[in-house]
Image (cartoon, rainbow, N blue to C red; front, top):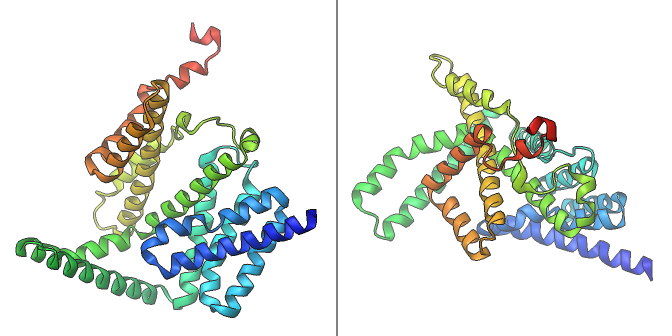
Length: 317
């Protein structure tokens, strides 16, 4: 009976993962919702029945995609398989959640870059294809806005600045890819913590994300990156600094959200108001920037009094 249960769970994990992947690839509009969870059925199955069994799901799904969908699609799925393998290997070993997310995001970003080079053969070819695709999407978006009644002045402004917007997106693409993988890793870890609450203390040193703080040394990277933007004649350095600024800003945004979540929990704020606040933060740029600033100033303000709480009685006195 146990073997029948394991086999049925195996094929359920296989089907679920493949369905999420194929659905996310086939329907780009739903990809943002479906693709982050491609590895989740594999992770749950592997943590319950053994890491080897979980990796067996990855291997079988990869082989089926090679046969029925082609090598390219199978290799893309392989990124999520590597995500599952990394989490299997690192959970409980990297107990600081920021180190775990950083390691997974860095590894998957490097793998994505290698796959891009494999598919296109050279960086210039990859760059030109991405640029053409972004320009096409930008043109389609402008045409839709025009049909919806966008004013002629706004239409001309977007049309004229389209190439500059595309170039900026391409410059920030490494940071965007890195943050995307970091988010995917984090959301999978959070769901695993909800699925296996008894293992949370074994996996992480931090009890609750609302108590998370970024490394203090990160502020010096932020300052150095800010100054590097104004160095004349070094375009490559400026691009690297810009990507670092985006990544570090995301870290302070996460710390700002942790501060807000801490006080929401402390004051028993209703879930509806919490959700409404988070939606406003994500949709309104001014609130997003305020949360980044809150996370940055929490380094000195220690609004949650975490440093004071960690002191011994003699140090506190």
